[in-house]
Image (cartoon, rainbow over all chains, first blue to last red; front, side, top):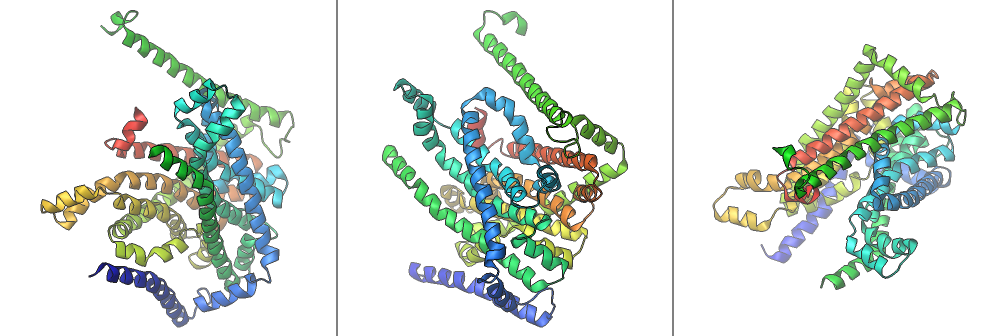
Length: 261
Length: 276
């Protein structure tokens, strides 16, 4: 087969297979006629009905807000705590046992405790919960990234008389940045999960809340629409992050190409 | 003769220093944990956070100790571990073969790219209500949830691993007349093992989280259910003790899977740099 023909077949498969899957699902669901598994057409109609955009403001916006604030706090804290830990071995020795314990803790185990400690089932508890567990990917990647810096860079910067803060800003941060961004990517997908868990456990608004209510009322339409929405949110946030990542790291790849060539 | 060399021999001197360093490391490790526990005790006893909201460290640990004398505790722990193991097992049994196929065939990879890219970011947590209303609080629902979550990281790692195979090795094998199956077994799989091992470590953490999640949210028996019951009845001490135990289970699984990953990779060049 010619190369071009080969490419065409692959492209056709890439388009045809998802369509075939959805079509098969539609047929299966229509035949089965089970309210628990509505056909994709019904789910899509419900999706449009709810999320575009009559309940967007009441449920999607609060969820996105919690993700954004929790993720933002986690990234900031992860970098601010991670850099000194990456630079200092004694600091790592003192803190790593605790970091290892909390990063291994299954997050839902702290859901009831977070409510008790914060006296809240509102944004305070949701955001804290999301921020706490999103901290670890950023923190661990920052520590790793900083530890991996070529010591020559740091010594050169020192011998040029750069102060500590200046060294962090000009050498440490840029050098560790690609790995920090990799941690941020993991944190972001974690943030969506933490949002769903915390809202599904106890809340008065949000996408997880819709899941909870529709489960309690055996209302399968909104439930599937919410599941689809969570999938779309996860997909879009991931895609958005890829774009931001490319922008953020553009200088880095260029810099590497130049210094490597 | 080992002791006799010390004092003058440089190597021995380094040895000694390394040993001294190791002792200080262990000392700091112990001290940092003691400090954290003391801090916990202090903020609860002095009322910075009221003892009703945060039982003191000693109260929590003695509660945990009491629980550990009961069969219920160990039963719950084993049930959670069972959900984790079966979920991870099912995920591995599916993800590794599928990953090998998708990694070996460009055509298959392209054909399933969109469905995978779409399904992967769906948090398994979103499936809880459906599972609850269809499979109910059965072991199957817990395994399904854990396996669904653990499947994706392992699948992606396997695909990358198979793709990363050295083409020269494959071509060499082919020119030696090695069959496709043997090539898979002798070349593709071994070179994908580091990736699969990393995938297993990631997936193992995910599987535990989701096994616990199933128990907390759907009431499947296990530690999660205990946490939920303790909260519902306002048994704060028990709630904290069970959460603490869950953390230890998580830590144990993390330590074991990290060690297993390292062991599986002992022969691999990527580990040499780490140990050096």
